[in-house]
Every structure is written in C-alpha cells, then in structure tokens.
Amino acid sequence: MSRKKISQNNQTQNSKKKQTTRKGNRIPWRYCVLTLVCGLLLVTGFFFAARQHFSSIDYSMKNNRLRRQLDELEADKRRLVLAKEIALSPAEIKKVAKKIGFTETTNKIAAVPADINSAVKPRVEKLTEKLKQAVTGKIEAVKKAVETTVKEVTRSSKPTEANDKQDRLQTQTAVK
Picture 1 (cartoon, rainbow, N blue to C red):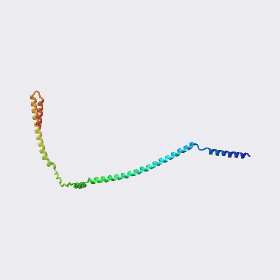
Picture 2 (picture 1 turned 45 degrees about the horizontal axis):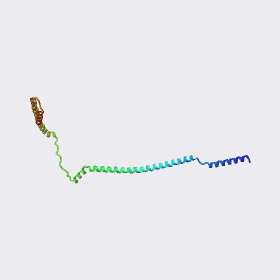
Picture 3 (picture 1 turned 45 degrees about the vertical axis):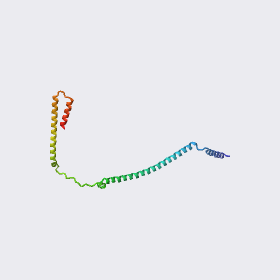
Picture 4 (picture 1 turned 60 degrees about the horizontal axis):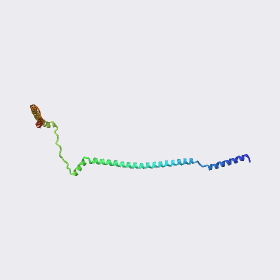
C-alpha cells in the first residue's frame, strides 16, 4: 500500500474513533442541571406573570363595581338634599302644619310710630324720678341706721357680739 492510502486509512479510522467516542461521551450532568434550573425559573416567571395578570383583572372589576356604587350613592345624596330643601321650604311647612291641624293667624303687628322718642320720653322721665326718690329714701334710711349704730358703739365702752348682731339686724331692716 502506498503511503497515501495508509494515511487515508488512518484518517478514516481516526475519524471513526472520534465519532465513536462522541457517541459514548454524553452531555455533562452540570449542563443538564443548569438547563433544568433555567427552565424552572422560566416556568415560575410565567406563573407569577399570569397570577399578576388575573389579579389585576380582578381588581379592575372590583374598582368598576365600586365606582358604580359611588355614582349611585352620589345620586342618592343629591336626591336627598333636594328632598330636604323642598321639605324645609315655607310652602311645604305650611302644608304640613295644616295637615296636623294648625291654623294660620292673620294678626298683624301694629305699625311703630316714626318718632319713637316722643312717645317713650315722658314715661322714661317719670320712671327715673320714681327711681331717684326710692334710692334717696333708702340712702337716708341707711344713713340713719349707721348713725344709730355709731351712737350705740360710742356709748358702750366694750362692744359685745350681741350688740354687733343687733346692729347688723337693724341695718338690714333699715335697708329693706
């Protein structure tokens, strides 16, 4: 055999050996574990994304329901405020009073004179004179009671508690 044929034979044999060794060598277990972990992470990510998606849909449905309820409550509030204003109107109050049995009075207040000072001034002057007389009378009575107590105190050299009580009673009766 010639050299070329031998070298070609050797190459084909070597290539067969390489192919056979590759078939015999499997993928290392580290790569398998790494691929499995990455796949699990990807699946859990999809799971959490789906969970968030469905929970956001649920929250939006609840939000819409609450908005509708809020709109209904605001409409009820407007309706009740309007009913309150109508119920407190004077015409409605008169209707309810008639139903209960009240009657409307037609008495009117007398007109007040334009010059009120001229009508009231003489009365005020009379009342002030009477008040002055009453006050001056009481002042004179108090003065007399004080003078009598002073005279009694000066007469007795030792004032006693009984004398003090009598003096107080006399001044009280004089003031009244």
